[in-house]
Image (cartoon, rainbow, N blue to C red):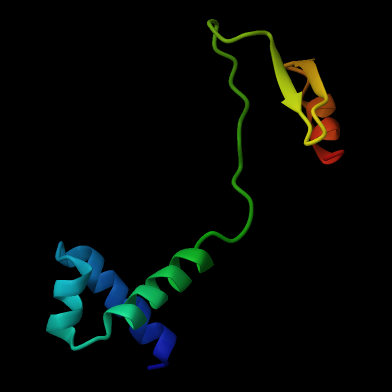
Length: 92
């Protein structure tokens, strides 16, 4: 088994064990810093790609949203006008 696969399996066992990281590492004879590094790497690799969002309009929500650019410019746009919102966000 490759090192990455071994560490993914170890992280999975740790998450299912309910033990604290330090306790698990002591039991498995892992270095705490190395194990923490692998947890971070595995978490980062699981965050690839885009998350699909579906617009929902709640009755109590306002009918517009405000986009604030880094230079301080503020724009209010109808919250249902997704095409315009997308175009404005891409200007950043």
